[in-house]
Amino acid sequence: MAQLITRSNETMENAGVGSPSIRFRKQECLSPRASEVQVRFLMAPIHPLDKLVIGGRYPVKPVYKHMGEDILGYDGVAEVLAVGPQVDDLYTGDLVIPSKFGLGTWRNVASLQRSDLEKIPRVKDLRFAAILRVSVMPAYFLVEDMATLRPGEYIIQNAGTSVMAQMVIQFARRHGIKTINVIRDRDQASAIMIQTALHQLGADTVVTESELLHNAASILENKKVTLAVDSVFGHSGRALMKALSAGGTYVQLGFLGGNQETLDLEPNDIFGKQIVLRAFRGSAQLASRSLVQQQALCDWLVHLFNEGQILLPPLGFTDVPWSGENGANEVLEAIRDAQVGELGRSKPMILFEMQEDSVDNV
Image (tube, rainbow, N blue to C red; front, top):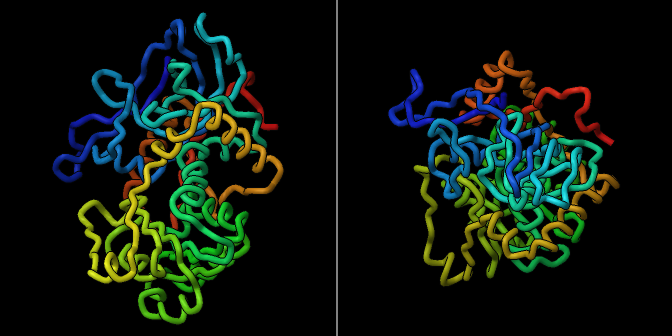
């Protein structure tokens, strides 16, 4: 039996009106049909965008349902178990990741369309493969596609401890582009630990939101800030907007501050500084590339990681074992906790129970 996490429209106890219920379900496993591939998921992260999906606020909706309920999970890495008779380019044991959002990766076994999967090379740590679609690729697109960046210029980004921000630091550094990374206010010891980790990764400047608010002039002195990446919105996003140099580009990436937040604009932003406003959709950037280019990008990113040229985010992950029905409550609790966005929490990574014949790390 397949085990999966779904979202219903019923409300959870002690939750606000309209809060969705997250449930553990079971589903019969069927052999893959003509163009389908049966996979076993090995790892699946819990991303900030999953909060938007669960709340019904993300524009790309889950593709699959069970008992009328959405099957959740947008990222992860899986191993091929079997293929349908029309699939001739995937084999048992191959590693695959989603090629599009909404496939429902929070389940141990699934039969999916071949066209919805991207084959990847063997990878030295499966956690990298598990974040490739929603964190690594978008970070690459942010650096490559959103603005014309020249060596010595700056990207400023908030949510500086996020996995995507840590990947942006690395891709920027490869091009000689510098980064200013804004983190939430916290105790001094925690701030120093984070600053050290991000500097070792290649960050040039790490500041708290309060430091940017009160010391912007000294922090930004003699810096050309060409790109602002806003994952928070609201007051934090406004601070990034103000930090941009003339002709810079502001990119709205997320709403970690809440969907009720607003972003203030001043006349000088558009008329005087001629700031360009853009919304980022990783799926759109991926779709702008041909299937051959998408496969080549996957292969290249895995190669960079296997060669040690890009690293897993040093601020890390929290493992959440899913060992069948007995581990379901722990997974459900981790998903609910992730919706709160507690300060300092590392990214939860669901680890599915691995059988003896499962794929091994290289």
